Length: 410
Image (cartoon, rainbow, N blue to C red; front, top):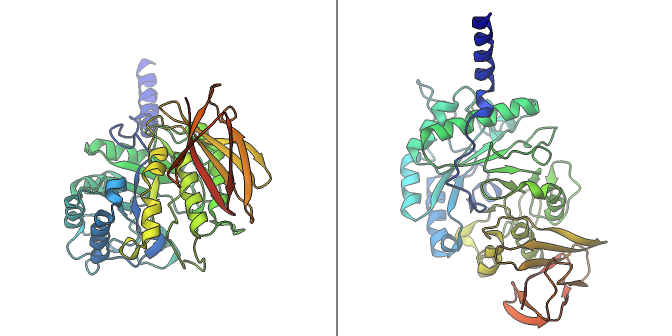
C-alpha cells in the first residue's frame, strides 16, 4: 500500500511541478521595465539595420539614459522553419548576422536585448497568415530558453495569441517557460500576454504574480484616445480596465496595460494622439506604475515627442521604488482625481480630464491622502513649476488632458 501511495504522490508532484517551481527571477523588474518595442510602428517590417539604428537613436536621443533600456524585437524576426535539431534561428535575409550578433550590438550601446515568442504553435503573425511557418515554443520550451540565454536575451515577450486553451492550460504553459528561463541562470524579464486573441481575458482577472514579471491586462492599444472596437482599445479604455486590479502590482510583478503610443501615427487608420493626449497617456501609465515600452519610430522622432518621453519627473513617478499603483479617489463625469503614494511620503495627484472640453478640476491634499499640514508644496511635473498651498489644489486641464502634480506636506 505504501508503494502505491508513493507512486501516486510522485505523479502528483510531477503534474504540479510547472506551477510549484520558483517564481520569476527576482534580480530583475524591481521597478516597471522601460524600453522600446518594434511592433506598434513597424509590425513585421523589421530588419537588422532598423534595430541597430534604433539602438543608436535610443542612445543619442537620451532615451537610454532616461531609463528606456530594453530594446525588444517583436514578431517576425525568425526563420519560418527551425533547423534540423529543432533550434530557432533568425530570418537569414533580414537578420543575416543572427541574433547573437544583434544582441551583442545592442549590449555594446548600453542597452538590454529582448525577443518575442509564443507558448503555442504559431505566433500572431503566423496565425493571421501575414508571416509563414509555425515556430512557437510549444514542446521546445527548455530548448528555446537555452537558445535565448545563449544569444544574450534579457527580456522575453511571451504572447498567447490563440483562441484556444483554458486558464489552467495558460497557467501551465506560462509556468513551463518561466521554469525554463530560471533554469538557464540568466536574469531575463518574463513578460506575458494571456489576453491576445483569447475570448477569456485572464490578464485583468487572474493574479499572475509568481509566474511572470509583468502581464497584459487589456486588449491591444491603438494610437487613439477612445475606440468602440471590440479588439482595439484607446487610452481611456485601457485605463478603465487596468485600474480595477491595482492592488496586485508591486516590485517584481507589474500590470501591463500595453505599450506606449506616444509619437505613433497613422497606424491601422488611427492618426495618433495630440500633445495633450500623449502627456495624459504617459502620465496615467506612470501613475499606474506600468511598464513603459515606447513604440514610436525613434529614428525620426520630433523634439516634442522626445521631450515628453524623457521627462525625468514623470519617469520618477513610474519608477518609484515603493511600486504602488495609483487609483482614482474621486470621479465626477469625465473628471477624475487620481492619487499615488510615493516612497518619500509625498503623493502624486493626476487631475484627469477625459472630456472634450477644458475643465477646472479641484482636490485637496487630504483627499490625496496627505496628513493635515499648515502648507503643502505642489510641483507641476509637466510645467516644472513649484507652488505652495494650504491644502486646496486646482488646475485648468485641457480636453483629453492631465495635470500631474507631486504634493508634499511641509
